[in-house]
Amino acid sequence: MLNWRRDPDYERRMNALRSETAQIRKETEQIRKENELLREQNARGRELLASIDALCWEDESSSIPAPPTPAATAPSSP
Image 1: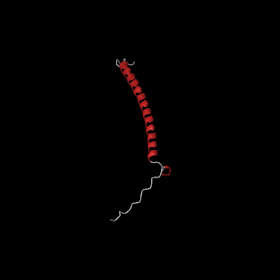
Image 2: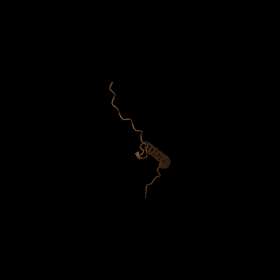
Image 3: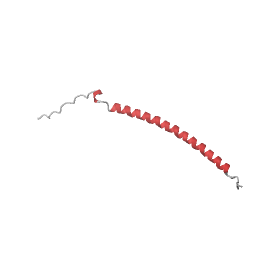
Image 4: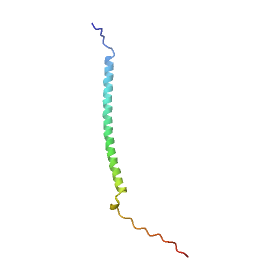
């Protein structure tokens, strides 16, 4: 015959584990939401950087040519 006795702390430990599990699930969902928000912000940041690059580093063929600079002249002698 087995000598089995009910563990008096079993219910308390099980309730603590259930509570901890629920807290972990809640935190995991919050992290997922934050990750999605960061992905969206990163995508917008990449779009802005691409726009900045396009404006600052336009192809030379599409840019307006700079006006010619006057040729340097030798100083006149008095």
